[in-house]
Length: 301
Image (cartoon, rainbow, N blue to C red; front, side):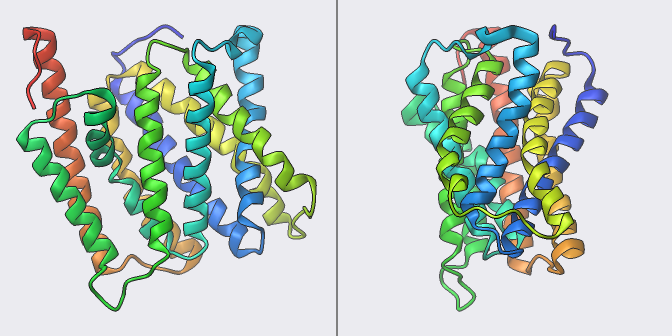
């Protein structure tokens, strides 16, 4: 695909669909876990299915050369971090409402900005540091460690957020090193390989037809969603596409209500709003920084 950053409406439409598919993944994972399937079996379905789709899609376009990596050990580590994030997120979903678990992921821009300081050597100004602190305030509002409503299971979501943030920073470190197809094949393929022992013994197929369909579809949806993200970023610049991610707050609330019969608590809604505001500010500062870098040759925080 040749890059065409002049189709913003198409890119936004694709990203709206993609974010919906992200919600479908979490909803499917929680559905299967509540149906009695072990968490690691759900994780295995997610990655084995995704690798099958990626294998067909990318090798049909690029052949086996799509597997060639310039930093294979780094790709393995990146895949392991992503796998850990998924497993921790599904574990959290086994205890917590989907609107709550997804709310933590809105803090990704906050965490990746913070981690980019030591890992990427990026300079962050006082205003973005203030936005990071506001984002963490939003997380505290959701978690409420000071109150009786605190649930220790949120530790899984916080750990999932941390590992996902490392994954995205590592992905940025791979920019210009490996092609997107290589990153997708390695991240899903290595995870699928590690998951084989979990399904090779003690695995039983779900008995309900709906559960079977969800089990088979979760990996396909995972692969398609990540492919669509790439397409969206080819059709429009990041400043147009990135904010669409926050539409997932609506999807998560709808999935919680219509599928699981839950509604977001007041603290979850307020904390999510604070995190989204912080993330949007960091995103705007990042766009301004990139513009300044291109025009003047030096960044501003």
